[in-house]
Image (tube, rainbow, N blue to C red):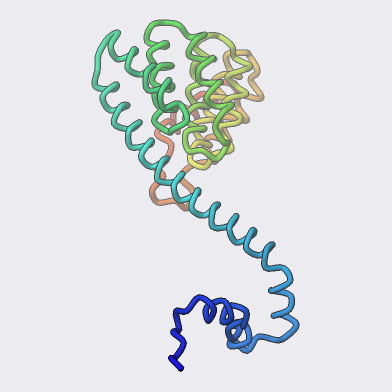
Length: 232
């Protein structure tokens, strides 16, 4: 009688009926855990697949964002090197194509600066406010936007709005002294002497503190002179 081949179809079918030694048993897992895993293996595979999909998607999106940011940065550099109408046109293109990137934000800021240069303060204020409302309060660009808004409101004779902008700016470390000084100046323009003196004093008190990298207020003598003048 000839020996049956291991590859014989009948032999394969019979072997398939007999389950191989369980991998879970070989891992010496508790019987209760083995039962649970086998009972819920479909759900486990679905969850595992979802997690793997999320991880892979996140990695691919990260690569996409990195590539997008690089393209946006290159486009912004080219736009900033342009002059005249070409500069504005290319900045608008950066905003249109890469508005969701940091370069898109800086392109919008530069467009607002161009509006200021053209004397269109209202447009610049709108643009700065739109950007401020879209970015996080913790974004490093936010205090720069507040400083620009305060200066533009003051230049546009909207003093109360300027005070509000500088008041918000004073909450950011490193901007306290300048913000208080600006508010003192604004209150002085409004004839609110007591409030002006208070802000000037807060500006002097802000000082460099314990930070060796923060220089002393260069306007200390001028500010003190303003305090003396308002108290006379």
